[in-house]
Length: 269
Image (cartoon, rainbow, N blue to C red; front, side):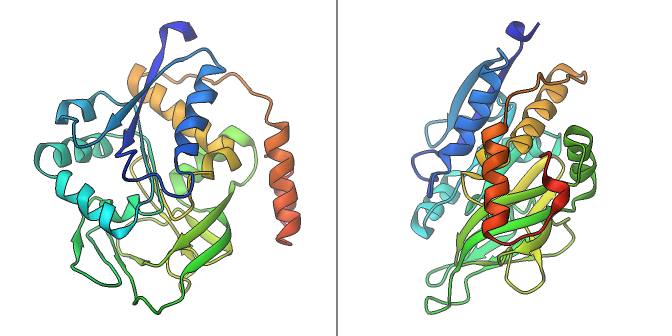
């Protein structure tokens, strides 16, 4: 049955938005599908793509970019392409948008210098860089997933409260409005270093400042994306075959110990 199933990963602007190892998220999803004998196709969604290409994908992945590259992306991501991306997210296509990619989905991003970059307005938040002399938000990040539906589904998968390990490096500060935060900051700075939130969740799309190693560090989140994509595509609940994540779990435990984050419920994740 697995051999008959396939997943298409839509990779948003890979040559312009793949800062800080963001391709790692694509590779992680790809490998975890292939290890389960699912057929995987990676479809770049870039300036040569059409709106119809956006409709072909089952999982969306977006990464980080510098301000200049982000402006180029936003100039291209207009009209029919923007509507296609909006339709995919609104109808439940799962996605992981890291670093700068979430700023494309919010109302706007104001860089440290230059003009405001208008977003798609899918996520009810704004991102503002406080100025070129402002201190960047850099370092390891640990969050407890608090987005209600996502947290419940992850608990059902892993059997314990979900915590994510990441690494952030951003100048912009994101302020949420009527959108649910991805999680609560346990270690690090998160959306803005002030209100204790990190990321946001809308439908099945996840926005976070954690970079591209996010999924390799938290393989259960990659599995949630795969499982959700299969359910959306084939209209049935599909249980994923278990994989040996011993090394990933040991690395997670080592990081929690290094950061002196005492979360005993994470032992089995």
